Length: 388
Ligand SMILES: Cc1cc2nc3c(=O)[nH]c(=O)nc-3n(C[C@H](O)[C@H](O)[C@H](O)COP(=O)(O)OP(=O)(O)OC[C@H]3O[C@@H](n4cnc5c(N)ncnc54)[C@H](O)[C@@H]3O)c2cc1C
Image (cartoon, rainbow, N blue to C red):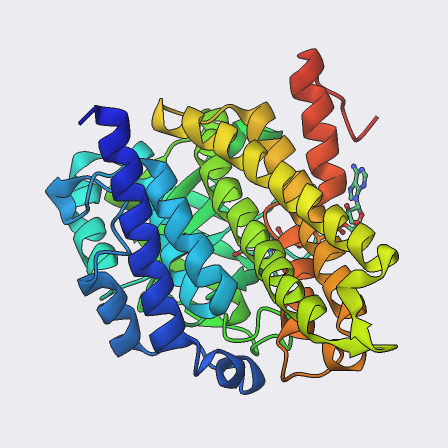
């Protein structure tokens, strides 16, 4: 058997396993988690860890599987089709801040935090955005001032997914007085550190079951050994964030694929005017458009995923994949509601949940408008200053 065949077989196996756990364990509770805005429990998270889903793209040394990145994306997709709160745990551990830590942290930091994250005992969120620094992330004002062996950290982070729930925060902050991105670094803040508090949980349109809150830092003393990325290394930080954008794109792919799968079934069962609605040409056109958009996004994501396995991701390929997938998920879930008629507008069919979540994934990790700016920046190799 060739190596490629082996990888392909393993990929198929892990996708199948993920789909069966997602459907059996999370299928029955996904709607309830959404309706009650409840995250997966610690026990469920640890079960995801025991099954190996939280460490797919991490080194075996820390308890991971050391598998290709595409395997992690396949698992995120299978869970994302069924239950985004569960998929979110796999996304955070494999493609989110824990992956940035794995790639940019010191050996001591990896040994300190990764095993617990991979086992599901702890979670790590990423805290970049602030009340006045969203798309303009480099306008952030949260400061980490060096004092002896520590940093004194002050600031407020906004829209932090898993805020209040996560144990660890990869906090982007100004660690030097250098202006713009040059002064930004990242350090790990623990939720139990004195001076860390959380805002009132946000009531988001979607993303229910994925808590969101402000993270407030008041004179938090963080040891210097928690510094993951020093000032001056922002390009590396942004490079690692591209891996998170791949996870984000995959969440959107999952939403689009799920909306498409439900529609394929429905249009062949639902009868009007005495025949299956798929027999109407306009329904065929909608279905073809949905498939076109989902498959195009899938190919863009697969191309971008290859560059992640080869090292740091190709930022142009990632921006194209994220932008396309985010917009695809919004359109395809909208079309799915349309072909389901009145049923599409009920909670029962899960399409409104897919549509609500699609908007969240498009804003998180940089809006499609900002992705477009990045696409042209990377295409032309030119920076376009948004402030002048
Ligand atoms: C569900 C969800 C989860 C999130 N999770 C996290 C998280 O875990 N951690 C974290 O740090 N942040 C998180 N965020 C924050 C997210 O990254 C920001 O919301 C996003 O970057 C946009 O920033 P903003 O909300 O301040 O909007 P703004 O930046 O105020 O943008 C408003 C509008 O203006 C447009 N715009 C702004 N600047 C330009 C420009 N130069 N050119 C063209 N159009 C422009 C935007 O595209 C948008 O349409 C999350 C957000 C959401 C909704």
